[in-house]
Image (spheres, rainbow, N blue to C red):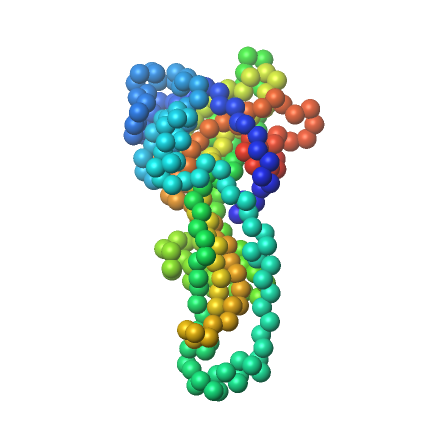
Length: 269
């Protein structure tokens, strides 16, 4: 799970390059790579947008239009830390009395309720090492071994594996799923002297807030709370990844410490 601060910075998108191996795999919408020519820089302000199996080169206005149509928030909503602060106190005497009085077979049944769902563009997910520019520029490409995963967080007392399995069956999502980048992603960009940068994905994230209850209808007792984050399958050059958009985060090279994210708090590795 990716939890970052709400401090925002603006990323710099410098020209993108696609190798011959990748160009043939694109399903282009508005922008046709043939118009640009192979190994030619895309226009400033363009993004590589992947939604499921569809891959498209878009500008900022097309990206915002897409997000609006899909109902995807352009920025992550604030993470509600207080949601997981619920503490369940099991009153055994009261529960035993209730069970005896009602003779209810459903008294031990656990129910799940989803209170809120957000779909949004998440913070930067790193896809290459950080590179320092030098001379006329240094190339950096998407590389293997970078990952992003679905996740579930629960309040104290809940069994996270049980919650994952139950939510997975309810929503048809594998909450233990991890995607890992591969070297077949043939993107390349150049980091100029004095700058530092890395390739990133900003994935779509579905965040659900919910609660767990035990007991029979009409006599439910809340036992916990949960937050579940899931991503959607995407594909880049026949490599499995998440739906979202790829770009480069490039900034003036830090004089000390590590490169900070363009969107979200924290630093790159």
